[in-house]
Length: 201
Image 1 (tube, rainbow, N blue to C red):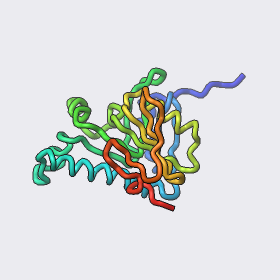
Image 2: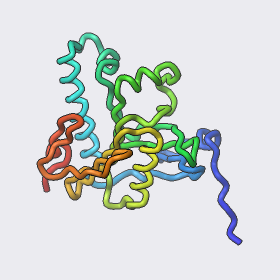
Image 3: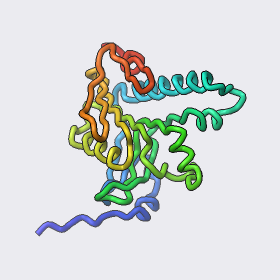
Image 4: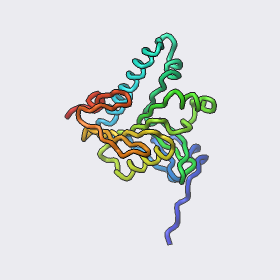
């Protein structure tokens, strides 16, 4: 007879000592997140910087000026976040999931909705509208797919999986077949040419 592993509660997860590593809580299981290798960090920051430039330009077209501050810009066009942005959310088989995403875009209407209850010090209380994951060679396909399905089940409208080695981005939507952006294609959400995100070999 195999003994079942005890599920960890959110309270136990929050009480864990800081061991210098990143962790997720998925269906009561504590999962470690090793630091990625290779170009992961470069691709992640290129993607987030490209979205942020788009938001800056869009905000100025709408009348925002830098002297008004970042808060005013976020309220107008939304904001981008990264560096394993932590979020706590519910899916049908796990009401207390905690995951960290490589990158996110939070539209202004979502920011306005959560601002009443979220003070910025705890995990973001929803899955942002857009979540991006940079997929490394060492990532298991089953784990990447699980993350995508969890994000969509948790409320994401779209999930981007960036594959730097293949210079492709798989675009996942809840009710639409997965699309693949490659080569010189453009991500239409923010008019981002792929070659601004993933370097050519």
